[in-house]
Amino acid sequence: MKYISTRGKSPELNFSDVLLSGLAPDGGLYLPKNYPSISNEELSLMRMMSYSELAFFIFSKYIDDIPSEDLKDIVKKTYTKKVYGFSRKEQNAEDITPTLKLKNNLHLLSLSNGPTIAFKDIAMQFLGNIFEYVLSKQNKSLNILGATSGDTGSAAEYAMRGKKGIKVFMLSPNGRMSPFQTAQMYSLQDKNIFNIAIKGVFDDCQDIVKAVSNDLEFKEKNKIGAVNSINWGRILAQIVYYFKGYFDVTESNDEIVDFTVPTGNFGNICAGHVARMMGLPIRKLVVATNENDVLDEFFKTGSYAPRGSDKTYLTSSPSMDISKASNFERFMFDVFKRDADILCKHWNQVDLGGSFNLTDELFERISNFGFISSSSKHVNRIGLIKKFYEDYNVIVDTHTADGLKAALDHFDSSIPMLVLETALPIKFEKSIFEAIGKYPDRPKQLQNIESLKQHNEVFNNDVNEVKNFITKNT
Ligand SMILES: *Cc1c(COP(=O)(O)O)cnc(C)c1O
Image (cartoon, rainbow, N blue to C red; front, side, top):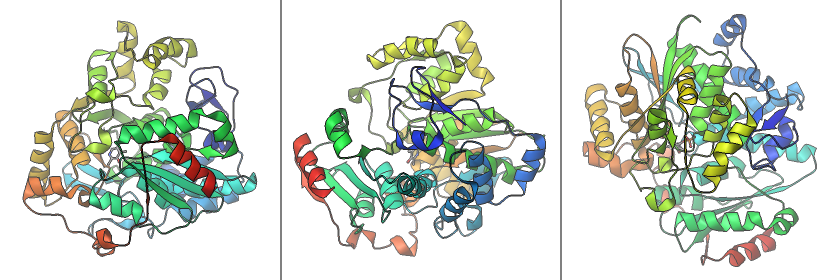
């Protein structure tokens, strides 16, 4: 399988090279040259598979430059009950992404049972293992530089801790993450993990990462890499649970289902789109946004107008506070029938801070891909957390509540709807308290996490301080 860039002006690459590169040199994102289709016979075989067998089966269609046996070992090591052990008592942890029936045809697909209790673990744990493998084969090392407001950074650190050939330099806004998130990251004692608290906000951290990455000489010399959400390896890993969820709530391959996805950078739902393109019987893919509703506006009107950080609101579902979704470009490439010139024409405007309006003809195509959307507000989230606790004795987090709102807006009671649960409620316990007047129970292993010894550097909002630190430690 070869990979091509959405902007059409980069050489084709193998999987391993796509994995280690960020953006394509022409500024585009990599996608497989075609989506392998799954036959009905294959679908029947897959129905019987465990999660790791399913992952291996799907990955094998996209990766042909890693020996099969090695890939199988990597996948087996990644998707174990031990790594994804935070599931509810009534769910089967062996399933890795178990479902939970809320009422007839309404299910949660729980993706947040990994070490940092948010769905990014599913892909990031795979990335940690496959990075280590590919780097050792190519005799290379990598220094991952990232910025986080909470979830991405901790998922990356838990995936990369102790990995040979990899160091992680993670910038976070000093004193601005929740105590739980801070403790999750700063309590790691691994020698290859460096937590850097910047005296500033998340955007300042992001700007430092950009400035370092734009210094090509420094980047080359210090082998700087990224694990951000445009990495194809992350999308690939996320395709698997759409299949798993489908098999869990259906009995035969002629049944169709709907999915609702709490959306930020469009990575998660992009994987759903790929699963559907491969032939998984998905009818609707519902995009759920919070008050940051750029994508809801697009799917309702065909007008795409990303916003700057001054118009991006801080909400109670903070991992979705994004107004320019990076993976959206991948989906639109397919909407434009993979015509890179049309893609470039639209994205040239976006890259300059502008917007675009689809023609009626192009907008009509969107529905062929099953996409619809809804947005929600804080009161909706709080109301739904309360309602689902009272009606079904299930506590969901604020992001999943955004999902429930959108799912109910589009619910067709005759067709199974799977709502992706993207974090566990203990991660956002203040909002849970606001909704139901009590805190969710914490698993034993996490009960005293805030009192563990923490370990981090504090730097001014200054690129050079960060560069010096990296040079000294690589
Ligand atoms: C990252 C994240 C999202 C958004 O996922 P995207 O792939 O960026 O669309 C939603 N919920 C939670 C809890 C997250 O951490």
